[in-house]
Image 1: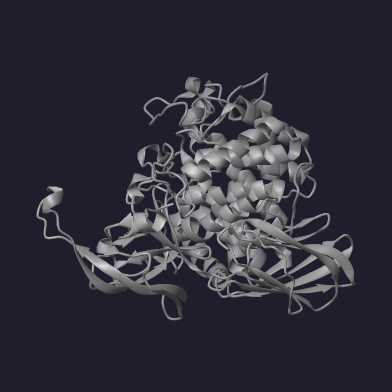
Image 2: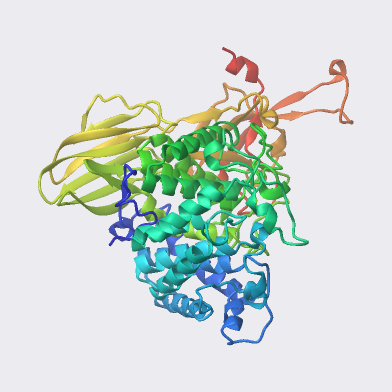
Length: 637
Protein backbone atom coordinates (compact mmCIF):
# COMPACT_ATOMS: atom_id res chain seq x y z
CA UNK A 1 0.00 0.00 0.00
CA UNK A 2 1.22 3.48 -0.82
CA UNK A 3 1.00 6.63 1.24
CA UNK A 4 -1.70 8.62 -0.52
CA UNK A 5 -3.65 11.74 0.48
CA UNK A 6 -6.46 10.70 -1.86
CA UNK A 7 -6.27 7.08 -2.95
CA UNK A 8 -7.93 6.78 -6.36
CA UNK A 9 -5.95 3.63 -7.23
CA UNK A 10 -9.18 1.61 -7.51
CA UNK A 11 -11.65 4.42 -8.15
CA UNK A 12 -13.50 3.43 -11.35
CA UNK A 13 -14.29 6.99 -12.44
CA UNK A 14 -10.93 8.63 -11.75
CA UNK A 15 -8.60 9.19 -14.66
CA UNK A 16 -5.48 9.55 -12.52
CA UNK A 17 -3.92 7.51 -9.73
CA UNK A 18 -1.74 9.03 -7.03
CA UNK A 19 1.95 8.45 -6.44
CA UNK A 20 2.97 7.44 -2.92
CA UNK A 21 4.36 10.30 -0.85
CA UNK A 22 7.08 7.97 0.37
CA UNK A 23 8.38 7.74 -3.21
CA UNK A 24 8.82 11.51 -3.52
CA UNK A 25 11.86 13.31 -2.11
CA UNK A 26 11.91 17.09 -2.34
CA UNK A 27 15.30 18.61 -3.18
CA UNK A 28 14.27 22.22 -3.81
CA UNK A 29 15.02 25.39 -1.89
CA UNK A 30 11.40 26.59 -1.70
CA UNK A 31 9.27 23.77 -0.27
CA UNK A 32 11.87 21.52 1.35
CA UNK A 33 12.90 24.13 3.95
CA UNK A 34 9.22 24.63 4.73
CA UNK A 35 8.92 20.95 5.58
CA UNK A 36 11.96 21.34 7.86
CA UNK A 37 10.31 24.31 9.58
CA UNK A 38 7.08 22.36 9.91
CA UNK A 39 8.80 19.47 11.72
CA UNK A 40 11.19 21.56 13.82
CA UNK A 41 9.03 24.57 14.68
CA UNK A 42 5.40 24.56 13.60
CA UNK A 43 4.17 21.17 14.78
CA UNK A 44 5.98 21.21 18.16
CA UNK A 45 4.79 24.77 18.82
CA UNK A 46 1.25 23.86 17.80
CA UNK A 47 1.28 20.85 20.14
CA UNK A 48 2.26 23.12 23.03
CA UNK A 49 -0.66 25.40 22.22
CA UNK A 50 -3.05 22.45 22.05
CA UNK A 51 -1.92 21.56 25.57
CA UNK A 52 -2.00 25.14 26.90
CA UNK A 53 -5.53 25.74 25.64
CA UNK A 54 -6.91 22.52 27.15
CA UNK A 55 -7.72 20.82 23.86
CA UNK A 56 -5.83 17.65 24.74
CA UNK A 57 -6.89 17.77 28.39
CA UNK A 58 -10.47 17.63 27.11
CA UNK A 59 -9.72 14.06 26.01
CA UNK A 60 -7.90 13.23 29.24
CA UNK A 61 -10.93 14.25 31.29
CA UNK A 62 -13.17 11.85 29.36
CA UNK A 63 -10.90 8.92 30.26
CA UNK A 64 -10.63 10.13 33.86
CA UNK A 65 -6.98 11.20 33.66
CA UNK A 66 -7.75 14.78 34.76
CA UNK A 67 -10.62 16.40 36.65
CA UNK A 68 -10.65 19.67 34.70
CA UNK A 69 -13.89 20.98 33.18
CA UNK A 70 -14.23 21.14 29.39
CA UNK A 71 -12.35 24.09 27.95
CA UNK A 72 -12.91 25.95 24.72
CA UNK A 73 -15.42 25.71 21.90
CA UNK A 74 -17.56 22.75 20.94
CA UNK A 75 -15.55 21.96 17.78
CA UNK A 76 -12.10 22.10 19.39
CA UNK A 77 -11.53 18.34 19.04
CA UNK A 78 -11.04 18.88 15.31
CA UNK A 79 -7.95 21.04 15.89
CA UNK A 80 -6.23 18.11 17.59
CA UNK A 81 -7.22 15.76 14.77
CA UNK A 82 -5.85 18.08 12.10
CA UNK A 83 -2.60 18.41 14.03
CA UNK A 84 -2.36 14.61 14.10
CA UNK A 85 -2.96 14.40 10.36
CA UNK A 86 -0.38 17.10 9.64
CA UNK A 87 2.17 15.39 11.86
CA UNK A 88 1.59 11.96 10.32
CA UNK A 89 2.05 13.31 6.79
CA UNK A 90 5.12 15.35 7.80
CA UNK A 91 6.81 12.30 9.32
CA UNK A 92 6.71 10.63 5.91
CA UNK A 93 9.21 13.21 4.65
CA UNK A 94 11.07 14.11 7.85
CA UNK A 95 11.95 11.68 10.65
CA UNK A 96 11.62 12.90 14.23
CA UNK A 97 11.69 10.47 17.14
CA UNK A 98 10.47 13.12 19.55
CA UNK A 99 7.52 14.13 17.39
CA UNK A 100 6.67 10.48 16.72
CA UNK A 101 6.54 9.84 20.47
CA UNK A 102 4.35 12.89 21.12
CA UNK A 103 2.05 11.88 18.27
CA UNK A 104 1.55 8.39 19.66
CA UNK A 105 0.96 9.75 23.16
CA UNK A 106 -1.80 12.00 21.83
CA UNK A 107 -3.33 9.18 19.80
CA UNK A 108 -3.43 6.98 22.90
CA UNK A 109 -5.17 9.75 24.85
CA UNK A 110 -7.81 10.04 22.12
CA UNK A 111 -8.36 6.30 21.83
CA UNK A 112 -8.97 6.10 25.58
CA UNK A 113 -11.69 8.75 25.29
CA UNK A 114 -13.86 6.68 22.93
CA UNK A 115 -17.14 5.47 24.38
CA UNK A 116 -18.16 1.78 24.13
CA UNK A 117 -20.56 2.45 21.25
CA UNK A 118 -17.81 4.16 19.21
CA UNK A 119 -18.93 7.76 19.83
CA UNK A 120 -16.22 10.27 20.64
CA UNK A 121 -16.69 13.96 21.28
CA UNK A 122 -15.29 15.70 24.36
CA UNK A 123 -17.81 18.55 24.37
CA UNK A 124 -20.84 16.26 24.46
CA UNK A 125 -19.31 13.83 26.94
CA UNK A 126 -21.19 15.63 29.74
CA UNK A 127 -24.24 16.06 27.50
CA UNK A 128 -24.76 12.62 26.01
CA UNK A 129 -28.51 13.12 26.09
CA UNK A 130 -28.03 15.99 23.66
CA UNK A 131 -25.74 14.28 21.18
CA UNK A 132 -26.88 14.67 17.57
CA UNK A 133 -29.75 16.90 18.77
CA UNK A 134 -28.12 20.10 17.54
CA UNK A 135 -26.49 19.01 14.27
CA UNK A 136 -27.00 22.42 12.70
CA UNK A 137 -24.29 23.88 14.94
CA UNK A 138 -22.76 21.01 16.91
CA UNK A 139 -20.02 19.98 14.43
CA UNK A 140 -20.20 16.41 15.75
CA UNK A 141 -19.86 14.69 12.37
CA UNK A 142 -17.42 17.39 11.25
CA UNK A 143 -15.14 16.45 14.16
CA UNK A 144 -15.71 12.76 13.46
CA UNK A 145 -14.63 13.26 9.85
CA UNK A 146 -11.40 14.95 10.88
CA UNK A 147 -10.64 12.06 13.26
CA UNK A 148 -11.15 9.62 10.39
CA UNK A 149 -8.85 11.58 8.08
CA UNK A 150 -6.22 11.77 10.80
CA UNK A 151 -6.52 8.03 11.35
CA UNK A 152 -6.04 7.30 7.64
CA UNK A 153 -2.90 9.45 7.61
CA UNK A 154 -1.64 7.62 10.70
CA UNK A 155 -2.24 4.21 9.15
CA UNK A 156 -0.81 5.01 5.73
CA UNK A 157 2.28 6.66 7.19
CA UNK A 158 2.61 3.92 9.82
CA UNK A 159 3.31 6.70 12.31
CA UNK A 160 0.53 5.82 14.78
CA UNK A 161 -1.70 3.02 13.43
CA UNK A 162 -3.75 2.67 16.66
CA UNK A 163 -6.02 5.55 15.69
CA UNK A 164 -7.31 3.62 12.68
CA UNK A 165 -9.24 1.12 14.80
CA UNK A 166 -10.70 4.06 16.72
CA UNK A 167 -11.85 5.59 13.45
CA UNK A 168 -13.42 2.34 12.24
CA UNK A 169 -15.44 2.02 15.45
CA UNK A 170 -16.55 5.64 15.08
CA UNK A 171 -17.48 5.14 11.43
CA UNK A 172 -19.45 2.00 12.32
CA UNK A 173 -21.30 4.02 14.94
CA UNK A 174 -22.11 6.80 12.44
CA UNK A 175 -23.38 4.29 9.86
CA UNK A 176 -25.58 2.61 12.48
CA UNK A 177 -27.09 5.92 13.65
CA UNK A 178 -27.45 7.92 10.40
CA UNK A 179 -29.56 6.03 7.88
CA UNK A 180 -33.09 5.83 6.52
CA UNK A 181 -34.21 3.92 9.62
CA UNK A 182 -32.35 6.10 12.10
CA UNK A 183 -31.48 9.79 12.13
CA UNK A 184 -32.16 11.23 8.67
CA UNK A 185 -29.97 14.32 8.94
CA UNK A 186 -26.58 15.77 8.06
CA UNK A 187 -24.00 17.86 9.87
CA UNK A 188 -24.19 21.64 9.66
CA UNK A 189 -20.55 21.61 8.53
CA UNK A 190 -19.69 19.21 5.68
CA UNK A 191 -16.46 17.26 6.14
CA UNK A 192 -17.39 13.70 7.02
CA UNK A 193 -18.27 13.00 3.36
CA UNK A 194 -14.58 13.32 2.41
CA UNK A 195 -13.50 11.14 5.30
CA UNK A 196 -16.04 8.38 4.73
CA UNK A 197 -15.10 7.95 1.07
CA UNK A 198 -11.41 7.78 1.95
CA UNK A 199 -12.16 5.31 4.74
CA UNK A 200 -14.00 3.18 2.18
CA UNK A 201 -10.98 3.36 -0.11
CA UNK A 202 -8.72 2.24 2.73
CA UNK A 203 -10.95 -0.47 4.20
CA UNK A 204 -13.07 -1.44 1.15
CA UNK A 205 -16.07 -1.54 3.52
CA UNK A 206 -18.92 -0.35 1.30
CA UNK A 207 -20.94 0.81 4.31
CA UNK A 208 -18.71 3.86 4.53
CA UNK A 209 -19.24 4.82 0.89
CA UNK A 210 -22.99 4.31 1.30
CA UNK A 211 -22.95 6.55 4.37
CA UNK A 212 -21.12 9.26 2.42
CA UNK A 213 -23.78 9.03 -0.30
CA UNK A 214 -26.49 9.18 2.39
CA UNK A 215 -24.96 12.35 3.82
CA UNK A 216 -24.65 13.91 0.38
CA UNK A 217 -28.16 13.06 -0.78
CA UNK A 218 -29.85 14.27 2.40
CA UNK A 219 -28.22 17.68 2.34
CA UNK A 220 -30.30 20.38 0.72
CA UNK A 221 -33.66 19.20 2.05
CA UNK A 222 -33.87 21.66 4.93
CA UNK A 223 -33.51 18.92 7.52
CA UNK A 224 -31.15 20.98 9.69
CA UNK A 225 -33.92 23.37 10.68
CA UNK A 226 -35.05 20.72 13.17
CA UNK A 227 -31.59 20.52 14.75
CA UNK A 228 -30.95 24.12 15.89
CA UNK A 229 -29.00 24.68 19.09
CA UNK A 230 -30.78 27.12 21.43
CA UNK A 231 -28.91 30.39 21.75
CA UNK A 232 -26.31 29.50 19.11
CA UNK A 233 -25.49 31.76 16.17
CA UNK A 234 -27.65 30.83 13.22
CA UNK A 235 -27.96 31.67 9.55
CA UNK A 236 -30.02 30.76 6.52
CA UNK A 237 -30.40 27.29 5.05
CA UNK A 238 -28.35 28.55 2.10
CA UNK A 239 -25.44 29.32 4.44
CA UNK A 240 -25.44 25.65 5.52
CA UNK A 241 -26.02 24.53 1.90
CA UNK A 242 -29.22 22.87 3.11
CA UNK A 243 -31.60 24.89 0.93
CA UNK A 244 -31.25 22.80 -2.24
CA UNK A 245 -29.60 19.45 -3.12
CA UNK A 246 -26.16 19.85 -4.64
CA UNK A 247 -27.27 18.25 -7.92
CA UNK A 248 -29.85 21.01 -8.34
CA UNK A 249 -27.53 23.93 -7.66
CA UNK A 250 -27.18 26.12 -10.74
CA UNK A 251 -24.76 28.55 -9.09
CA UNK A 252 -22.60 28.85 -6.01
CA UNK A 253 -24.77 29.63 -2.97
CA UNK A 254 -24.13 32.47 -0.54
CA UNK A 255 -22.72 29.85 1.79
CA UNK A 256 -19.96 29.51 4.33
CA UNK A 257 -16.91 29.19 2.08
CA UNK A 258 -15.23 26.27 3.84
CA UNK A 259 -18.49 24.36 4.16
CA UNK A 260 -19.09 24.75 0.43
CA UNK A 261 -15.59 23.65 -0.58
CA UNK A 262 -15.54 20.67 1.78
CA UNK A 263 -18.92 19.63 0.39
CA UNK A 264 -17.74 19.83 -3.22
CA UNK A 265 -14.56 17.94 -2.29
CA UNK A 266 -16.60 15.14 -0.76
CA UNK A 267 -19.00 15.16 -3.70
CA UNK A 268 -16.09 14.80 -6.13
CA UNK A 269 -14.85 11.82 -4.13
CA UNK A 270 -18.32 10.26 -4.32
CA UNK A 271 -18.40 10.86 -8.09
CA UNK A 272 -15.07 9.09 -8.59
CA UNK A 273 -16.53 6.01 -6.91
CA UNK A 274 -20.05 6.05 -8.40
CA UNK A 275 -19.85 7.87 -11.74
CA UNK A 276 -23.02 9.82 -10.93
CA UNK A 277 -23.30 12.08 -13.99
CA UNK A 278 -25.85 14.43 -12.46
CA UNK A 279 -23.47 15.02 -9.59
CA UNK A 280 -20.57 15.62 -11.96
CA UNK A 281 -22.59 18.11 -14.02
CA UNK A 282 -23.34 20.05 -10.86
CA UNK A 283 -19.68 20.07 -9.83
CA UNK A 284 -18.64 21.42 -13.22
CA UNK A 285 -21.28 24.18 -13.06
CA UNK A 286 -20.26 25.19 -9.56
CA UNK A 287 -16.55 25.18 -10.41
CA UNK A 288 -17.07 27.48 -13.39
CA UNK A 289 -19.22 29.87 -11.38
CA UNK A 290 -16.80 29.96 -8.45
CA UNK A 291 -13.59 30.43 -10.41
CA UNK A 292 -14.98 32.91 -12.93
CA UNK A 293 -17.06 35.17 -10.67
CA UNK A 294 -16.31 34.64 -6.96
CA UNK A 295 -12.62 33.80 -6.55
CA UNK A 296 -9.88 36.27 -5.72
CA UNK A 297 -6.85 36.71 -7.96
CA UNK A 298 -4.89 34.82 -5.27
CA UNK A 299 -7.20 31.81 -5.41
CA UNK A 300 -8.83 32.87 -2.14
CA UNK A 301 -12.53 32.20 -1.61
CA UNK A 302 -14.98 33.97 0.70
CA UNK A 303 -15.56 37.70 0.43
CA UNK A 304 -17.76 38.35 3.46
CA UNK A 305 -16.91 38.61 7.12
CA UNK A 306 -20.57 37.93 7.82
CA UNK A 307 -20.70 34.18 8.21
CA UNK A 308 -17.27 33.71 6.57
CA UNK A 309 -19.28 33.33 3.41
CA UNK A 310 -19.03 33.51 -0.35
CA UNK A 311 -20.60 36.65 -1.78
CA UNK A 312 -22.55 37.48 -4.90
CA UNK A 313 -20.84 37.27 -8.32
CA UNK A 314 -17.98 39.79 -8.54
CA UNK A 315 -18.37 40.78 -4.89
CA UNK A 316 -14.64 40.78 -4.20
CA UNK A 317 -13.59 43.63 -1.92
CA UNK A 318 -9.90 43.91 -1.08
CA UNK A 319 -9.38 45.37 2.39
CA UNK A 320 -12.57 43.60 3.57
CA UNK A 321 -11.70 40.32 1.89
CA UNK A 322 -12.22 37.41 4.25
CA UNK A 323 -10.50 34.74 2.14
CA UNK A 324 -10.06 32.39 5.09
CA UNK A 325 -6.93 30.26 5.11
CA UNK A 326 -9.10 27.16 5.61
CA UNK A 327 -11.02 28.06 2.45
CA UNK A 328 -7.75 28.26 0.51
CA UNK A 329 -6.74 24.83 1.80
CA UNK A 330 -10.16 23.49 0.84
CA UNK A 331 -9.88 25.07 -2.62
CA UNK A 332 -6.62 23.15 -3.16
CA UNK A 333 -8.33 19.97 -1.94
CA UNK A 334 -11.28 20.34 -4.28
CA UNK A 335 -9.24 21.17 -7.36
CA UNK A 336 -6.88 18.26 -6.68
CA UNK A 337 -9.86 15.90 -6.68
CA UNK A 338 -11.30 17.42 -9.86
CA UNK A 339 -7.85 16.94 -11.41
CA UNK A 340 -7.71 13.28 -10.39
CA UNK A 341 -11.16 12.75 -11.89
CA UNK A 342 -10.31 14.29 -15.26
CA UNK A 343 -6.63 15.01 -15.87
CA UNK A 344 -7.73 18.53 -16.92
CA UNK A 345 -4.99 21.12 -16.38
CA UNK A 346 -7.43 23.92 -15.50
CA UNK A 347 -7.91 22.29 -12.11
CA UNK A 348 -4.15 22.06 -11.56
CA UNK A 349 -3.89 25.76 -12.48
CA UNK A 350 -6.30 26.76 -9.71
CA UNK A 351 -4.64 24.34 -7.30
CA UNK A 352 -1.25 25.92 -7.97
CA UNK A 353 -2.54 29.50 -7.85
CA UNK A 354 -4.23 28.93 -4.50
CA UNK A 355 -1.33 26.99 -3.03
CA UNK A 356 1.32 29.62 -3.77
CA UNK A 357 -0.79 32.63 -2.85
CA UNK A 358 -3.96 32.41 -0.75
CA UNK A 359 -2.89 29.31 1.19
CA UNK A 360 0.82 30.00 1.69
CA UNK A 361 0.08 33.49 3.00
CA UNK A 362 -1.68 31.77 5.90
CA UNK A 363 1.57 30.94 7.71
CA UNK A 364 4.56 33.12 8.59
CA UNK A 365 8.01 32.43 7.21
CA UNK A 366 9.24 31.37 10.63
CA UNK A 367 6.36 28.89 11.00
CA UNK A 368 5.09 30.37 14.26
CA UNK A 369 2.12 32.56 13.38
CA UNK A 370 -0.90 32.48 11.10
CA UNK A 371 -3.50 34.42 9.19
CA UNK A 372 -7.11 33.39 9.65
CA UNK A 373 -8.24 36.12 7.23
CA UNK A 374 -6.26 37.09 4.12
CA UNK A 375 -7.12 40.59 2.83
CA UNK A 376 -5.70 41.94 -0.41
CA UNK A 377 -5.22 45.41 1.05
CA UNK A 378 -4.41 46.62 4.55
CA UNK A 379 -3.51 49.81 6.36
CA UNK A 380 -1.05 47.79 8.45
CA UNK A 381 -3.16 46.62 11.37
CA UNK A 382 -3.71 43.10 10.03
CA UNK A 383 -1.01 40.79 11.39
CA UNK A 384 -0.52 37.07 11.83
CA UNK A 385 -1.28 35.62 15.25
CA UNK A 386 0.30 32.68 17.11
CA UNK A 387 -3.13 31.11 17.73
CA UNK A 388 -6.87 31.74 17.65
CA UNK A 389 -9.81 30.82 19.84
CA UNK A 390 -11.25 29.18 16.73
CA UNK A 391 -7.99 27.58 15.66
CA UNK A 392 -9.00 25.71 12.51
CA UNK A 393 -6.56 27.49 10.18
CA UNK A 394 -3.15 26.77 11.78
CA UNK A 395 -3.39 22.95 11.67
CA UNK A 396 -5.14 23.13 8.30
CA UNK A 397 -2.30 24.95 6.56
CA UNK A 398 0.11 22.62 8.38
CA UNK A 399 -1.56 19.51 6.99
CA UNK A 400 -1.52 20.99 3.48
CA UNK A 401 2.21 21.73 3.55
CA UNK A 402 2.94 18.37 5.16
CA UNK A 403 1.10 16.53 2.41
CA UNK A 404 2.54 18.57 -0.48
CA UNK A 405 4.74 15.73 -1.87
CA UNK A 406 1.53 13.84 -2.57
CA UNK A 407 0.21 16.53 -4.89
CA UNK A 408 3.11 16.69 -7.36
CA UNK A 409 2.72 13.54 -9.47
CA UNK A 410 0.11 11.12 -10.75
CA UNK A 411 -0.07 8.08 -13.02
CA UNK A 412 -2.48 6.86 -15.65
CA UNK A 413 -2.51 3.61 -17.58
CA UNK A 414 -0.25 5.07 -20.26
CA UNK A 415 2.12 7.35 -18.39
CA UNK A 416 3.30 9.73 -15.68
CA UNK A 417 1.92 13.18 -14.94
CA UNK A 418 3.70 16.15 -13.39
CA UNK A 419 1.26 18.66 -11.92
CA UNK A 420 3.41 20.98 -9.81
CA UNK A 421 7.00 21.80 -10.64
CA UNK A 422 9.19 21.23 -7.58
CA UNK A 423 12.78 20.03 -7.64
CA UNK A 424 12.51 16.44 -6.49
CA UNK A 425 13.12 12.77 -7.14
CA UNK A 426 10.26 10.34 -7.62
CA UNK A 427 10.19 6.59 -8.13
CA UNK A 428 7.16 4.83 -9.58
CA UNK A 429 6.22 1.47 -11.01
CA UNK A 430 4.41 1.88 -14.32
CA UNK A 431 3.10 -1.34 -15.85
CA UNK A 432 5.88 -3.36 -14.23
CA UNK A 433 8.71 -0.96 -15.08
CA UNK A 434 10.48 0.85 -12.23
CA UNK A 435 11.01 4.45 -13.32
CA UNK A 436 12.89 7.27 -11.63
CA UNK A 437 12.31 10.92 -12.51
CA UNK A 438 14.78 13.57 -11.39
CA UNK A 439 13.22 17.03 -11.61
CA UNK A 440 15.54 20.05 -11.44
CA UNK A 441 14.09 23.56 -11.34
CA UNK A 442 14.13 26.86 -9.44
CA UNK A 443 10.36 27.15 -9.71
CA UNK A 444 8.48 29.35 -8.78
CA UNK A 445 11.27 31.85 -9.47
CA UNK A 446 12.33 30.39 -12.82
CA UNK A 447 10.27 28.58 -15.44
CA UNK A 448 12.88 26.16 -16.74
CA UNK A 449 12.20 22.57 -15.71
CA UNK A 450 14.60 19.72 -16.49
CA UNK A 451 13.41 16.14 -16.09
CA UNK A 452 15.84 13.24 -16.30
CA UNK A 453 14.04 9.97 -17.03
CA UNK A 454 15.59 6.76 -15.75
CA UNK A 455 13.51 3.65 -16.53
CA UNK A 456 14.91 0.34 -15.32
CA UNK A 457 14.44 -0.88 -18.88
CA UNK A 458 13.74 0.87 -22.16
CA UNK A 459 10.02 1.39 -22.44
CA UNK A 460 7.41 3.32 -24.34
CA UNK A 461 5.17 5.52 -22.21
CA UNK A 462 3.91 9.10 -22.05
CA UNK A 463 5.27 11.83 -19.84
CA UNK A 464 2.61 14.48 -19.28
CA UNK A 465 3.89 17.98 -18.49
CA UNK A 466 1.52 20.75 -17.45
CA UNK A 467 1.58 23.98 -19.41
CA UNK A 468 0.27 26.53 -16.88
CA UNK A 469 -2.49 28.91 -17.86
CA UNK A 470 -0.14 31.87 -17.35
CA UNK A 471 2.37 30.60 -19.96
CA UNK A 472 1.91 31.54 -23.63
CA UNK A 473 5.34 30.93 -25.19
CA UNK A 474 6.67 27.67 -23.85
CA UNK A 475 9.20 25.40 -25.50
CA UNK A 476 9.90 21.70 -25.02
CA UNK A 477 13.20 19.99 -25.75
CA UNK A 478 14.27 16.36 -25.57
CA UNK A 479 17.98 15.69 -25.18
CA UNK A 480 18.60 19.28 -26.23
CA UNK A 481 16.50 19.21 -29.41
CA UNK A 482 13.44 21.43 -29.62
CA UNK A 483 10.37 19.37 -30.48
CA UNK A 484 8.25 22.00 -32.22
CA UNK A 485 5.15 20.96 -30.28
CA UNK A 486 2.28 23.35 -29.76
CA UNK A 487 2.22 24.15 -26.05
CA UNK A 488 -1.19 25.57 -25.27
CA UNK A 489 -1.84 27.27 -21.94
CA UNK A 490 -3.79 25.30 -19.36
CA UNK A 491 -3.18 21.90 -20.96
CA UNK A 492 -0.88 18.92 -20.50
CA UNK A 493 1.53 18.17 -23.29
CA UNK A 494 2.00 14.44 -23.60
CA UNK A 495 5.40 13.26 -24.82
CA UNK A 496 5.16 9.62 -25.87
CA UNK A 497 8.32 7.80 -26.90
CA UNK A 498 10.60 4.94 -26.00
CA UNK A 499 12.44 6.33 -22.99
CA UNK A 500 15.99 5.30 -22.16
CA UNK A 501 18.04 5.88 -19.03
CA UNK A 502 19.41 9.41 -18.97
CA UNK A 503 16.91 10.91 -21.42
CA UNK A 504 16.38 14.57 -20.56
CA UNK A 505 13.23 16.54 -21.17
CA UNK A 506 13.46 20.31 -20.76
CA UNK A 507 10.41 22.53 -20.48
CA UNK A 508 10.93 26.29 -20.77
CA UNK A 509 8.09 28.41 -19.46
CA UNK A 510 9.02 32.08 -19.77
CA UNK A 511 7.90 34.00 -16.68
CA UNK A 512 6.76 37.35 -17.99
CA UNK A 513 5.72 40.13 -15.65
CA UNK A 514 2.05 40.62 -16.39
CA UNK A 515 -0.79 42.89 -15.32
CA UNK A 516 -3.97 41.07 -14.34
CA UNK A 517 -7.25 42.95 -14.67
CA UNK A 518 -10.69 42.27 -13.21
CA UNK A 519 -14.11 41.95 -14.76
CA UNK A 520 -15.65 45.47 -14.79
CA UNK A 521 -18.23 44.38 -12.21
CA UNK A 522 -15.51 43.94 -9.60
CA UNK A 523 -15.96 47.55 -8.51
CA UNK A 524 -13.10 47.45 -6.00
CA UNK A 525 -10.64 46.94 -8.88
CA UNK A 526 -11.92 49.50 -11.37
CA UNK A 527 -8.95 50.95 -13.27
CA UNK A 528 -6.54 48.81 -11.25
CA UNK A 529 -4.15 45.98 -12.05
CA UNK A 530 -2.46 43.23 -10.08
CA UNK A 531 1.12 42.23 -10.84
CA UNK A 532 1.72 38.55 -11.59
CA UNK A 533 4.79 36.57 -12.54
CA UNK A 534 4.53 32.85 -13.11
CA UNK A 535 2.30 31.33 -10.44
CA UNK A 536 2.83 34.23 -8.01
CA UNK A 537 0.70 37.27 -7.28
CA UNK A 538 2.63 40.30 -6.04
CA UNK A 539 1.83 43.10 -3.62
CA UNK A 540 3.25 46.43 -2.55
CA UNK A 541 4.30 46.55 1.10
CA UNK A 542 5.20 49.76 2.91
CA UNK A 543 8.55 48.59 4.23
CA UNK A 544 9.85 48.18 0.65
CA UNK A 545 8.59 51.61 -0.38
CA UNK A 546 9.44 53.82 2.61
CA UNK A 547 9.10 57.23 0.96
CA UNK A 548 5.52 56.88 -0.26
CA UNK A 549 2.26 55.44 1.01
CA UNK A 550 1.80 52.33 -1.12
CA UNK A 551 -1.90 53.15 -1.46
CA UNK A 552 -0.77 56.24 -3.41
CA UNK A 553 1.38 54.34 -5.92
CA UNK A 554 0.11 54.13 -9.50
CA UNK A 555 1.49 52.57 -12.66
CA UNK A 556 1.34 53.13 -16.39
CA UNK A 557 1.10 50.28 -18.87
CA UNK A 558 4.42 51.45 -20.34
CA UNK A 559 6.31 51.43 -17.02
CA UNK A 560 9.62 49.60 -17.14
CA UNK A 561 9.57 46.60 -14.79
CA UNK A 562 12.27 44.08 -13.90
CA UNK A 563 12.35 40.87 -11.87
CA UNK A 564 15.34 40.32 -9.60
CA UNK A 565 16.17 37.58 -7.10
CA UNK A 566 17.17 38.89 -3.67
CA UNK A 567 18.70 36.10 -1.62
CA UNK A 568 18.69 37.79 1.79
CA UNK A 569 15.10 39.09 1.63
CA UNK A 570 12.20 37.07 3.05
CA UNK A 571 14.15 33.80 2.84
CA UNK A 572 14.96 34.58 -0.78
CA UNK A 573 12.41 35.98 -3.23
CA UNK A 574 12.15 37.41 -6.70
CA UNK A 575 11.08 41.02 -6.35
CA UNK A 576 9.63 43.18 -9.10
CA UNK A 577 11.02 46.69 -9.35
CA UNK A 578 10.48 49.54 -11.72
CA UNK A 579 9.02 52.91 -12.50
CA UNK A 580 5.80 54.18 -10.96
CA UNK A 581 4.13 57.37 -9.81
CA UNK A 582 3.02 58.79 -6.52
CA UNK A 583 -0.49 60.16 -6.97
CA UNK A 584 -1.45 62.96 -4.60
CA UNK A 585 -4.08 65.65 -4.26
CA UNK A 586 -4.33 68.81 -2.19
CA UNK A 587 -8.05 68.31 -1.80
CA UNK A 588 -9.07 68.57 1.85
CA UNK A 589 -12.49 66.90 1.81
CA UNK A 590 -13.76 63.57 0.58
CA UNK A 591 -15.66 64.96 -2.40
CA UNK A 592 -15.37 67.94 -4.69
CA UNK A 593 -16.37 69.07 -8.14
CA UNK A 594 -14.56 67.45 -11.03
CA UNK A 595 -13.64 70.92 -12.26
CA UNK A 596 -11.90 71.67 -8.96
CA UNK A 597 -10.20 68.30 -8.55
CA UNK A 598 -6.45 68.27 -9.25
CA UNK A 599 -3.98 65.39 -9.08
CA UNK A 600 -0.22 65.53 -9.15
CA UNK A 601 2.01 62.73 -10.38
CA UNK A 602 5.54 62.34 -9.05
CA UNK A 603 7.81 59.78 -10.73
CA UNK A 604 9.16 57.21 -8.25
CA UNK A 605 10.71 53.75 -8.10
CA UNK A 606 8.83 50.91 -6.45
CA UNK A 607 9.33 47.34 -5.29
CA UNK A 608 6.76 44.53 -5.14
CA UNK A 609 7.11 41.24 -3.27
CA UNK A 610 5.19 37.94 -3.51
CA UNK A 611 1.84 38.23 -1.73
CA UNK A 612 2.49 35.13 0.38
CA UNK A 613 5.46 36.87 2.05
CA UNK A 614 3.77 40.07 3.26
CA UNK A 615 3.42 40.90 6.98
CA UNK A 616 6.65 39.12 7.94
CA UNK A 617 8.40 42.41 8.77
CA UNK A 618 7.37 45.66 10.44
CA UNK A 619 3.71 46.65 10.05
CA UNK A 620 2.60 48.99 7.32
CA UNK A 621 0.09 49.40 4.49
CA UNK A 622 -0.13 46.74 1.75
CA UNK A 623 -2.05 46.45 -1.48
CA UNK A 624 -2.35 43.96 -4.34
CA UNK A 625 -4.47 46.00 -6.75
CA UNK A 626 -2.69 49.12 -8.05
CA UNK A 627 -4.22 52.03 -10.03
CA UNK A 628 -3.23 52.08 -13.69
CA UNK A 629 -3.18 55.65 -14.92
CA UNK A 630 -3.82 54.80 -18.57
CA UNK A 631 -6.15 51.90 -17.78
CA UNK A 632 -8.79 52.52 -20.43
CA UNK A 633 -6.24 53.15 -23.16
CA UNK A 634 -4.46 49.93 -22.18
CA UNK A 635 -7.53 47.69 -22.23
CA UNK A 636 -9.66 49.18 -25.00
CA UNK A 637 -10.72 46.77 -27.72
